[in-house]
Image (tube, rainbow, N blue to C red):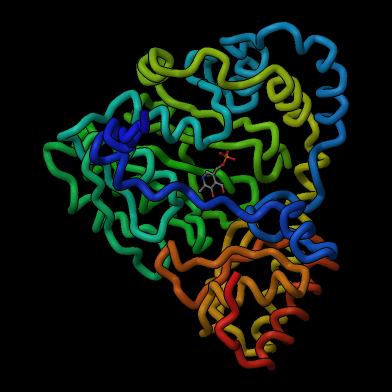
Length: 375
Ligand SMILES: Cc1ncc(COP(=O)(O)O)c(C=O)c1O
C-alpha cells in the first residue's frame, strides 16, 4: 500500500516556515565541481590554520576517544575561568557558539514569547528564535551596525531574549562599550541580552567591549566567544559562554550532556596557552585587512569598514552571479542576498596570496559583463 503520509504533517507550523542556514560552500565541493583548486574566503576562518599546540593536544587525546568526554568540561572551564578572571560557575561550553545561541532559545523561549535581534545580523539568531515558535522581532541596522536604541524601543513585556553581534557579521561594524552600557541600563532587568563576540580577539578599537564587567557584576547578560575564529578550530566545534552562575545553571538544564567533545576540549586548553598563534593571527589580519581595503579603494569598489576578519564588499552587481563567477576564478566567497545585501559579497581576510587572488578575480569579473550565469 502506498504511504500517503507526509512527514511534513508532523511539523509544527513555525518549523515548516523555517529556511535552513546556508553554510559556506566547502572547498572540496567546489574543487570537485570545477576540477581545479580554489581558496575559501567564505566562512571567516583563520587562514593561518589551527594552533600547532592545539593540533598536538588533539593527537595525544585521540587514543582516549573510546571514552565519553568530560560532560562538565572541567579542565577547559577552569582554564577559561582563570583566563578571564572569573569563577568556573560563570562558564559554559558549547559545540561552537552556535550551539549556545540555540541553547539560550531552547532554555528560555516558547510560543508567545519574543526574541529580538537586528535585520542583516548573523542568521542563527533568527533561526534560534523561530525554532522555538517564539515571535521574532528585527530592527533595521543603523550605518550597518546594530541600532541599540531601536532594539531598546522594540522591547515589550513579552521580550525575553535579545541577540547582539558585536561586531556584527556580515557588516563588520561594532557598537562601543559606552553604547552597550547605555543600552543595558535602559532595558528592563528581566530581559536576557546575549552579546556575541565571536570576533573579539581581532578588534583593535580602544572603545570596544568591556563585556566581562557585566558578567562580574551579575547582569542578565551572556557573553559568547568562540574557538572557531582567531584560534582556528572551527572544525572541532567549540565555543563558550560567560554569565552569572544562576544563568549558567539554567542553561545547563537543557544543554546536551556531551556538547563539547573530548578532542575539542583538549584543543581548547592548548590553544588558550598558544598566545603566539593568536598574536600572529591578529597581526596577519590587521596587515591584510589594510592591504585589501587599500586595493579596493584604489579600484573604486565600495566596502563597509570592518573591525573583524571579513569585509562586506558591494560590487553593485547581482551577488549570486558574482559569487559563481568568482568561484570559476577559484575563489569562494559568500553572497549576501539572504542578509539583505543583494549586491554585496562577504569575503574573509585570508593569506596574502589568497587575498591577491580574490582582488584579481574581482577585477577580472568586473571587466566582463554578467550573462545570467546559473549554478
Ligand atoms: C557573529 C557570529 N557568531 C557566531 C558564529 C559561529 O561560530 P561558531 O563556529 O562558534 O559556532 C559566527 C560564525 O561565523 C559569527 O559570525
